[in-house]
Image 1 (tube, rainbow, N blue to C red):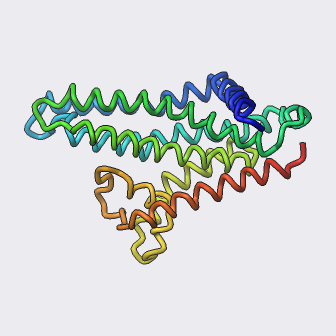
Image 2: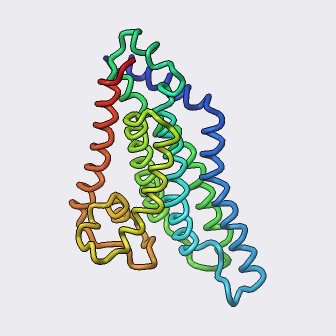
Image 3: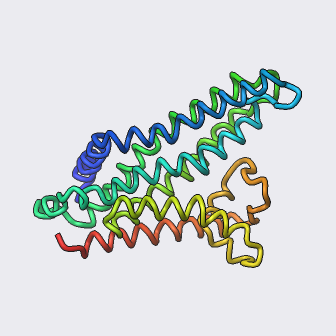
Length: 260
């Protein structure tokens, strides 16, 4: 498969995802609406009682926005899109039709990942733009982040959501079920993983959690309850790569061996 065919197949996968209006709509809602609500509520609280509530924007606003978008709602949107990309063809019963065209099964799987990332990152970038706008509009005289910090925050947000979205593609291809993969990934990423991070008796085993690997690359501290462990850059990168490679490999294996 040459670059032209790969680009055409990726474009076709992206078009299929864009046509899933329910998935796109919910991903937009999950990524954008909470950001709007957050700044609206925080700004209202500050306006009503400035002494008790600080400005919604400024550096602290960026920190809260990253926590909301990069760790919570962005990954949710990524999971929805990744699950649709990984299991959509099987769920729709068209996988057999794709196989009989003669395309490599591995190629059919591989092009789903960049297509899912393209859609996921488009939505996340739009949501991050709202975060940045809120940071400056509602700063109310408080210190604002530098351009470097803003771009570092964007990079971390894209990394966090992109890794989880790609993992969702692989996991959904493995299970061939959108519902099962969405439920399992949301439960693990937003419930189980944070709980395990707080169990001190697990010791250094917690460093192998994907959440810990990703948090290392955040330009700001996003955990206030002591659940973030100290990882070296090499270890954090290794943890992230191992999780990503494992699920991509499992998804590719399942796509290559499953009955059509």
